[in-house]
Amino acid sequence: MNVANYIRKYAKTSSNNVAIIKKDNINSTHKWVEYALDIVDMSVLLMQTKDLKEKYALMDALDTAQRKKDWHYKQKNFRLNDAMRIFEAAKNIAKK
Image (cartoon, rainbow, N blue to C red):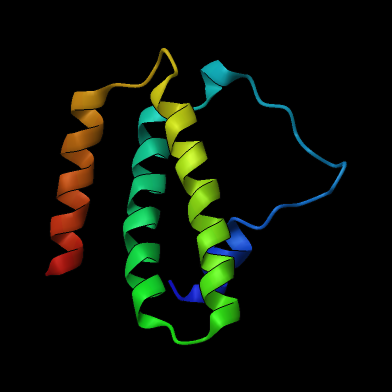
């Protein structure tokens, strides 16, 4: 993904049309992996971009992704061993 996609994905919305989903219906392990991979990608993009506005927007997006990752880590349906296995596999696939 590029910088604009990450900024859009983690933009703070002020919409009142928020769907309420039960915590038990969210697979915290997979969401944690998604946010962890996004954090790795955004960190690389943060070092590559030269536009100051993009840097600040990426830092905000990184902060949001980190908070979401931390929240999923604390959930009862989070499985650390599975998360680390999936995360490492996804990182290795991305390198090839």
